[in-house]
Length: 182
View 1 (cartoon, one colour):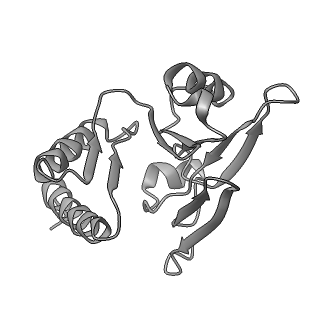
View 2 (view 1 turned 90 degrees about the vertical axis):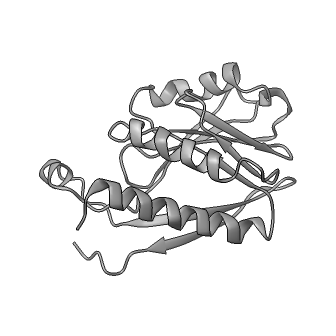
């Protein structure tokens, strides 16, 4: 059966397993980014993960109510939001106001997923200042009937991004679902 409770539990188990595997390599940061269709279940999942990893100092779960979250590492600042509420053109300025790492970051990027398809935008602040890239991320979600009617038929895919603190974006790794040939 595909009852949402069963799907939720299986999803949580899969995430916990992967976090445990990744935690053998490095600290893990989990940012819970609420979507426009799943904001309640997203919070419940974040709360469940906080409880699961409460005594693991190398796993950090950010389940705060802010719809935008930020991750900073060695001069790289990445903002995350679902992207259905903010104007995309406002995201660089929102990042500047919300993130305490804005002034120390050399590389700045925002990731949004509302449209479930890959797209890149670039905003520059005057000629001399480092710009903020805004990247639409693809999705592993299946196309439901609403998205099909609207014509949102992007291929299911995921992307891992490797950053270098000295040189910025270093590599992109893509997973494309070859079984989703719509």
